[in-house]
Length: 146
Image (cartoon, rainbow, N blue to C red; front, top):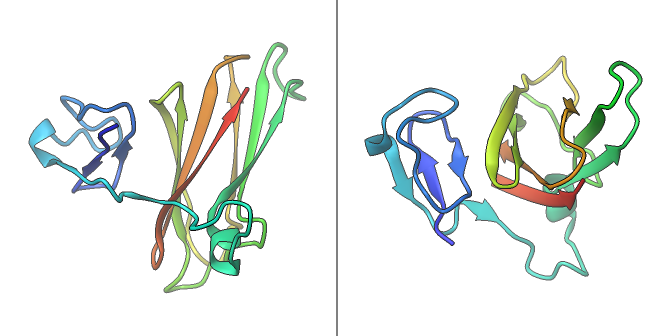
């Protein structure tokens, strides 16, 4: 499948098509470039390195929400080993997709935030993908069934 990246904001289109306008920054389709290696993958998924353990998102799906009835909560943290949030090495954002369509971006700043985010979804089924962007090591993804 083709992957397109917005050259303005770093949004990654994972549905195989560059959008007419970026859903994050609204840049035109001409701002997208095809990038086969846009999302990093582990060399051996059964034997992750420490670097991979810090970058592959860990996703927890909770079918019951404490705030909204009928809501599905999704909690995401960066890594089995918590990723640093330092001035020059941090997670800039986490993008969320439902069935390969973009639904949200959570922006993270170093120093005062942990590398984690949560969503309250109306959906109770489908495939959720979380993609994070590290300032030094690129984008990493995790896909889970709701």
